[in-house]
Length: 561
Image (cartoon, rainbow, N blue to C red; front, side, top):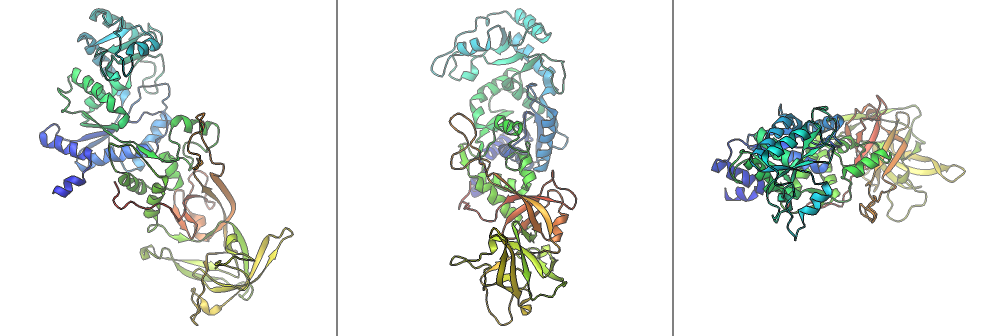
């Protein structure tokens, strides 16, 4: 039992202590996105952590949209977030909520604070509030409007609600402590005037609550027990506790709802900032928020990542209080590990050159039976057509090879995967010296890829029957960011990699791959894992995105966090 306790992360330890001491009977967690953009890989950690904790302790997981800022919020983002959360396997059942559901209760909560003498209306401008707030080393100065009476504050707050005040002219502030060492406690603004149409409440409101006021109230109303957020909110926790305590939702910080902070997930050399992604989308540098070069959850799904691979990645990252960065190669490792036993290994030639087997019977087609995945016999076998003319990768032939080149060159014998030994006898070129056709002869006795006389060959290459080949478009992705230069230039612009996308329009695949359905993934022998694009594929005409190459520089830590 002792070892089991050690293996629990610090959040699990807090939850188990709260259950044991009776601070909560049922664990209730939530994922609270603001619907102002698409979710990214960092959000996946929060989604899986919150839903996983609720599941582990037999509790409840809520999806709640923090829609308190109408300027940037859209229904499009709401729908994309719901799709992402569902795809990751986080089941909110019927527990879906919106901050805007509680606007009336938040308004009543503000009235309650005013009546308690704990909130007042201020006419200071945003700039003046910043000036009065002080610095990390100097205390703030009292707001000159903080002495207004309860009656005056109630009247002015009503005028704010009734639309009688211009945007920015007045705010409601919590009365806490202008001398506090925590700047967040120096009479924070809890309501602002904003004449904006909300995507759910329309024009009902022209005042909106600030996040630090709204969030704890939402948690309290929903019965959230553990409000798990990222480390930058650690300094906001005293304000969270102040709000729920002053409003009577709890008596002390040990009770629930309780805010707990954990370290964010930082990936090296990727763009996660919404404003940068928005610019990439608007400037058509990428193909929308789900461009496979991005790490939005929609982009990862489109590229061919699986929920299981992202769960594995999040598990490897662990949960801690210390900020750290994770190499993107670890995410690639996780998708390789997930797919290598699950997906069939098919033959595709990305940069084809034609081969003719001169001594193979003209017009003959053989059906060769091959394993779908040698490491997983349960995936069965399939038949692949073999003919006199084939396509192989252009890089698998060299007229004048260097030492230790074991693929096809004049006079050399190689194995055609699952088929025959063939010997190259020459090639044809066009007027520019480019090889257009390779001539070979085959050994009929070597069917299946082994010679009865026991001779060995060092090279094995894949192929596709020219007669049965299907032409497809293949997209090869590299990191969107130039890895050597880092993400940002000194002026704040992005260091984009000009080679982040290569489109091959002349690739050929074995016939079965032509029927690939959107999101269906395969291992292309020797090339990597590929997924049929859901946006651009048509029936019988798939477009393949490379999910990840086969080789990796990533080494799994001996004791991952």
